[in-house]
Image (tube, rainbow, N blue to C red; front, top):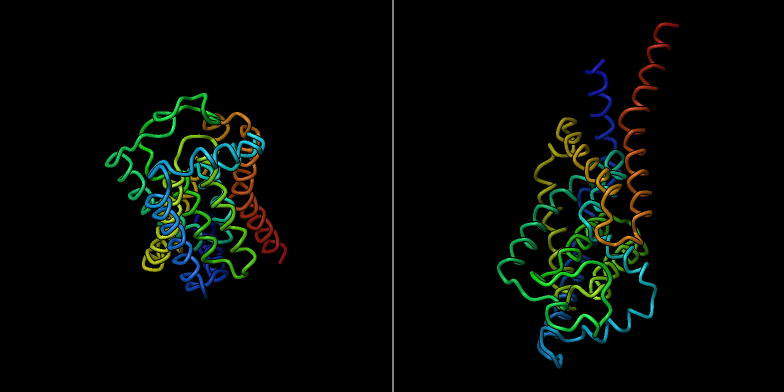
Length: 288
């Protein structure tokens, strides 16, 4: 029975991999262009802003405060690594190539963001300005500002989707969502605009490197054992969303809904439907 299930998953992964192109037309141009624009904006703010590295923060933070705080809490959690894994779980069975690319890109993004943060150790807004001088939503963070890790994660996740998307409108939607997630870090008061631009640019390039790595490591797409190991990892990340709102209580319920949806989808695709198909085939074989 286990052999049949393995073979069934292997066939499903092969079929799923064929749904997405190995090389997506225009994907490289979109990611490189996005990274270039973000990098130029970050450099421009740094060089020509009236406050250097801190330029633009107070203006944007106060402008974003006109929108509901709950909206920014929802958007900022699009850059939470657990949310990215839970969303990846929704794609894993039908789009294993995309799922594997996300994991490969995540490794590059972790090296980029977590390598630079302690090395540069820039002060965050709460360490520079009085807390009552700007809008602060959620926990107070004072260290390791550059680059914005949430922006990197959002750019990696949506950058991979941008690469594989076949329609321009979807690429625009994914780009806007990633940008909104990045800007939310300014809205909640924990990052400078330069941090966000560096995070988005680095995340977009990490997504591109992830695409290249995924193309060279096909075992991560077609090997059922490897695939299931990362599915379980994503499942644990989704479970964590039930118990930790990331410091943004207004997003607790949406996180729980996402976690429940991701886990239920994985259970149905990897356990229930294969069991039903196996029982159906056994019954048909017995009747014949």
